Each structure stands twice: as structure tokens, then as C-alpha cells.
Length: 280
Image (tube, rainbow, N blue to C red; front, side, top):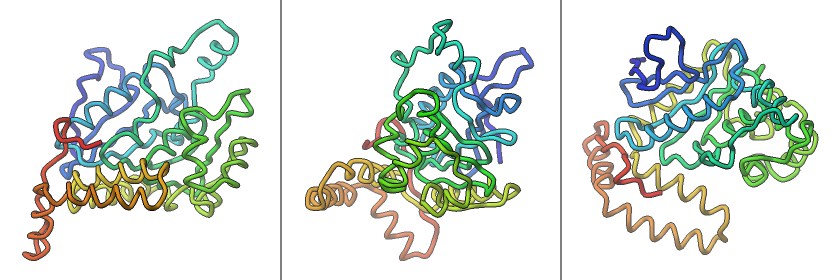
């Protein structure tokens, strides 16, 4: 993996950024939540940098897929307990109303793959759920956690979770806030694949690299839009929208390139997706 230095890294402080940003030669951006001493618990600094890095990923044509993971033994157990304690007691505040919605992975026009390496709860659970594909280690623990903190299902989770695992499983997870280990998460469809810890990041990178090398960024952005918008449509309406999008896709250069690369038996040379040509 070739690291590209983040402009948000502290200058001369000797401190590592709360999110590491690295990019491979294939165009896969790896974002690593980087507070391992606190199990990558979420903070305002982390959220601000997270939003900034997603802003850049969305508009950079050299980024074709994103992998989201955590440093150390955890993915993200939710909001940092110090922050949570301060906000619950009134001693502090978290400016949620002044921040973008915590739906960046689902709103990103590029595929986002979660590599869940450990505890994944609260905000961490939400962010993993917003990703398009989830890989996890068998020992990962998933928990919505909200009902045990006196909170509701945040960030649209009550909308997306039933669509991922079904209404019954979603009701169970949200009402009980009980932790779910990797095997059960796989059985209910919360994760796509279980991978041993030593192979997790490599497997996620291999999958993301395949998307980056072989698939049209433009087509993938349209498919993400279909998957999101069709949740609120009936079949007939979704089918009609697909016909309209197909006409749009056939006019784009990627259609011709996809056909020619297949006929010529060579890897496709698709253009990257940036701000100007983001169809979402």
C-alpha cells in the first residue's frame, strides 16, 4: 500500500491523526480510525476529520473505492465515554445539529467497504451499517447500544437496519441493544463475510481493488443510487427508473469502454469519478 500524506496530519506536533488516510496504487483509499488507546472511541475531532476525508474521497477521481477500519483491537465502540458522560450530565455539548448527517458511507458515490476488526457499537455500528459491504472477524461484537443509554436509533439506523437484516432481527437488535458476535452477524446478514484477523484488511483491500480495477466508477455510482432510492419505490417505479438510468449509462464513455475491453480481452480503462460527474 502506498501512503499518501494527509493534509490534516498535525504539523510538527509528533501526534498521529485520529484517522489515518492511505491510498493504494489501485485507487483504494483506506481510512483507519486511529485512537487505539481508547479503542477508537468517537470524538468531535474524529468526526470533523472523517467528514473532511470523505469530502476529498468523493471529489478525487483517483479514489475509486474506500475501506474503513480501526487501529488496534477495535473498530469503534461508539462515542467516547468522557464525551458521553459530559453530554448526559449537561457539563458539555456535542454540536450534532451543526454537523453533516452521519451517513457519509451511504451517501458516497463510490463503494465503501467496512473491515470490522473488533468492537463495533453506537456510532461505530452506524458507520459500519452505512457501508456497502461489511467484512468482519469472528470475534467482532456488534451492538446498537442505544436503548441501554436512554437514546433512540440514531442516524437513520431504524430505516436501514431492517433492510439489511429484516424487521425481526432489527427489532431485536435495536430494542435489546444486545451484542452480536461475528457468526450470528453473518447468519442474520449483518456482515457479508467472516475473515480471520490476520487476513481481514488484506481481504477487504483485495475486494476493493477488484472493484477499482474492473468496475466502472460511473456505473457503480448509479447502482448505489438505485439501491438507495429503490428502497422507497415499488417494483414498477424502480423498473422505470432503471430504464431511464440505462439510457443515461449507454450515453456515457464507460459503456463503450466496458464493451471494447470485453471484446479485446483486456482490463478496462475507466475514468475516475469526481465532483463534476457525480450522478448522485
